[in-house]
Length: 347
Ligand SMILES: *Cc1c(COP(=O)(O)O)cnc(C)c1O
Image (cartoon, rainbow, N blue to C red; front, side, top):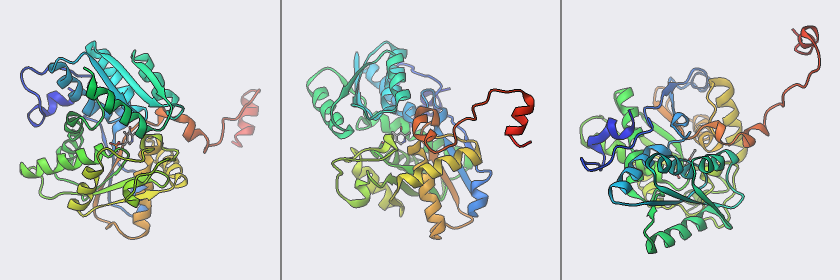
C-alpha cells in the first residue's frame, strides 16, 4: 500500500484523484544496534528512506504531486534536480504515461541517479550552472508554459512527504524528542514539521520533537543566514545555496526549539562509513550529514541519554557509490587457491 492509500484522509486527494502507487512509504524504522550504545543514547532509530521505490524519500511527495497533476489535466512534468527528484519524477511519469523533463546542473549529479531518470524515459537536460540556477530556470519556464512544476515548491510534494512523520509516530506511539535530518532545498524539514504539527492538532501525539537540521559546511546558507553562490560539498543532494523552503526550515527550527548546523565533508564521510560498517545501513552522503551532526551534539552533551532520537536516512547508498568508495580499502586482487586465500586472509 502506498502513501495515498495509507494516509488518504490527511492528504489533498479526493474521489477524482487518480490512484498512483509504487508502494512508496512504510519504510522501516530501524533501532540502532551499535551506534546508540557507543554514544550512550538509549533510544536511537534510523528511518530508512532509501528503501522507497526509487531509493529516496522523494517518492512520498512525488506520488501525491503526480496524482494531483494528473487530476488537473497535466501532460508534461518538469523539475530541477540534484538527482533524486528527477529519478522519482521520471518513475511516476513513466507509471502514469506522462512526459517527464528534468533539468540537472551539468556535471554535478551522481551517475546512478542520472541513469534512473534516463531508464525511466525522461528527457534529461544538463544545464550549465548550479542547482539554484536550474531551479530558477525551471520555475520561469513552467510559469509561461503548460508544464507542471514538480519541485518541492509544489505544495503537494510537501503534503506527501509529511507522511514520514506520521509513520514514525504510528510506530513509536508518540513523537520522538529529536528528529535529525539533512537540509538542502529544505522541503523535507518543512514537511516533517507540518506532519508532526498536524498529528499534534489531531491529538495523536503528546509532544512535538525538536527539529535538528544538518547542512554541509560548503553549502550552509541557513546556518550562515546568507545564500551561497557556489555551494560545494561531497553530499550532492544537499549541494544547494539558496533553499526554496528557507522560511519553512527556519520556522521548523524556531517553533520546535531545534537547530540547524553545518558539518564538514570529512565528518559526513566518516559518519557514512560508520553507519554502514556498524549498523548495516548504507545511505548516501547527504543522509550521513545528520548522523555526523548527532555525533557532535552528543559530544557537546546537547542531547540527553534517555531521549528518543530519530535520524532520517534520506537516500540509499547505492545512489552514489563513487563518493563512498574513496574512503574504503579496495578489494584484494588474488590469483590463487584456497591455501593462498587463507594465507592472504591470515586465517
Ligand atoms: C532531496 C534530498 C535531500 C534534501 O532534502 P530537501 O527537502 O531538499 O531539504 C537530502 N537527502 C537526499 C538523499 C535527498 O534526495
